[in-house]
Amino acid sequence: MLRVGLTGSLGSGKSTAAKLFAAHGAQVLHSDAIGRELMAPGQAVYAEIIAHFGNSVVLPDGRLDRPGLARLAFAEGRVDELNAIIHPAVIGHQRELIEDIARRNPAAVVMVESALIIEAVHGDGADWQRRFDRLILVTAPEEVKIARFVRRCVGDTKATDEQIAEFEEEARRRLARQMPDEQKMALCDYVLTNDGAVTELEWQVDQLWPILRIAAR
Ligand SMILES: CC(C)(COP(=O)(O)OP(=O)(O)OC[C@H]1O[C@@H](n2cnc3c(N)ncnc32)[C@H](O)[C@@H]1O)[C@@H](O)C(=O)NCCC(=O)NCCS
Ligand SMILES: Nc1ncnc2c1ncn2[C@@H]1O[C@H](COP(=O)(O)OP(=O)(O)OP(=O)(O)O)[C@@H](O)[C@H]1O
Image (cartoon, rainbow, N blue to C red; front, side, top):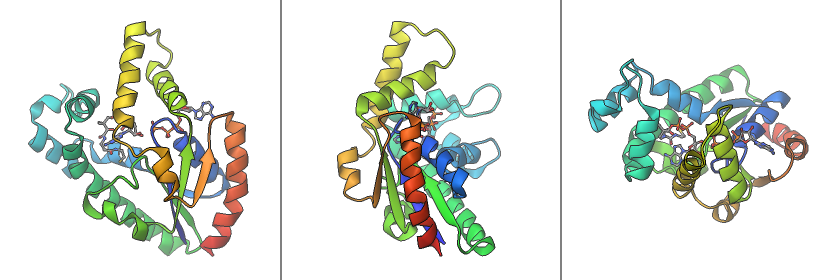
C-alpha cells in the first residue's frame, strides 16, 4: 500500500485532482467531508464543539452553524481551538479507514485529500512524515485560488459587489492560516500546477498515477 497526502491551499484544485486520481483507482479520503460527518448531531465532536463554543453555534434545527463557526475561527482568531477539537478526530478516523483499506487491498494507493497536512499540529497531525509515504501539492496563483473560492460561494445566485468583497476577504483570512505554496513545495514529493484548464491538471495526474501505483506494490 502507498499512503499519499494530497494537499494544496484553498481553491488550489486538490478536490478536482483527487477525483482524477480516484478515476484511476486511488482510494480517496476527503478530509473536509470526514470533518463534516464528525460534526453532525450525535457525534462526539459535535458535543465537544458546543461544550467549548457554547449554544450560539447551534442552528434552530440542531445542526452546527458553519458560517458562524467560520466567523469565530477566521475573523475572531479562534481557529486553533476548533482545530484542536476536529483535527485529532479526523486524523484518527482516517487511520481506521486506511487500516481497513490495507486489510482489503494491500496494493492500494490511499490518498488523503486535505488543505492542512503540513500545518496540522494537534493529535497525530504533527506526525505527517510518519503518516504518509508521499506528499503531492496542488498549486495555483493566489488570485486564481481566491477567484475560485468566490465563484463557489456565489454559486448560481447573483451576488452584490459587497458580498463578493466579503467572500474575497474570507478567502484571504483562510489562506492566511495555510502555509504558502513556496514553503510547502520544499516538503512535497510532487507538485501539480493547476493554473490552466482542468485537462492540463488531468495530464499531470495521468503521468503521476503509474509511478504511485508501482510504488504501492
Ligand atoms: C470553519 C468551518 C466550520 C467552515 O466551514 P465551511 O463549510 O465554510 O468550509 P469547509 O469546511 O468546506 O472548508 C473549505 C476550505 O476552507 C479552508 N479551511 C477550513 N478549515 C480550515 C482551518 N482550520 N484552517 C485553514 N483553512 C481552513 C480549507 O481550504 C477548506 O478546504 C470548517 O471549515 C471547519 O470546521 N474547519 C476546521 C476543521 C478543519 O480544519 N477542516 C478542514 C480539514 S479537516
Ligand atoms: N483548472 C481549473 N479550471 C477551472 N476551475 C477549476 C479548476 N480547478 C478547480 N476548479 C474549480 O475551482 C473550485 C475549487 O476547486 P477544488 O474544490 O478542487 O479546490 P480545493 O483545493 O479542494 O479547495 P478547498 O480547499 O477550498 O476545498 C471548484 O469549483 C472547481 O470546480
